[in-house]
Length: 261
Image (tube, rainbow, N blue to C red; front, side, top):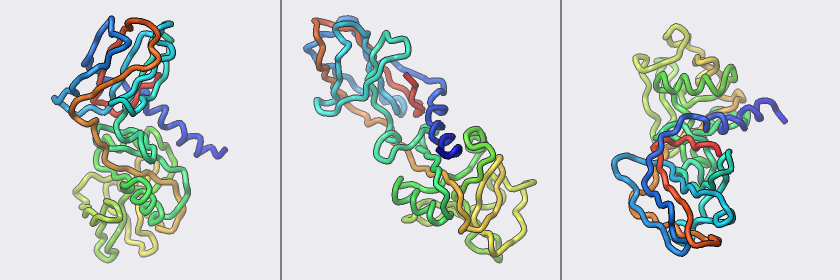
């Protein structure tokens, strides 16, 4: 297997080890096996994950949970084996599976070597997003940590060579967003490179931007907006509970990086 592919394949696991913030919204040490759990998602902030945590024992070892009676929750055991966990994630984990970045962005490192325009098309049509932008120090630190010295396309390109006018990709169905040198940038020494009519697309490596031929083949990063869990009532129904009662706790998190089992 290609080394780069292996590297990108395990990025998601690395991202998932970030510290989590959890808020307990329901707890019952003697929840009836025959009853549903009903709760309202808090409205104080956006939440992106929900975990139903059940003490693992003979009563609950084969249990499943269903949201609103028809959506089966993902299940695994915690690392110590003491709890079964049933989870709902933000939309990053559904459809075309993407990794997690922050509370506003889903992201995917795509290990396919293609041109800038081809990368833009894939990000727009497959992920309903765009090539990754780099707008601040947080973006730079994140990308540098997980991409190292790999060269990859980002969403910036030159659109008017004679005036060195650049713009950010915002998806095929949206106008590109203009970029100014006074904006955050990672050009060497903070200066635009010398005009080269053969190099109009921007790539990144080692936390530095550089121009390259748009037809060059590189890996790339797609990004799209994330959506929080829907606000409202949640109803959970257990199945295969083989006793009278069980110990349960439900938590929600404003973080988008999923916690590893």
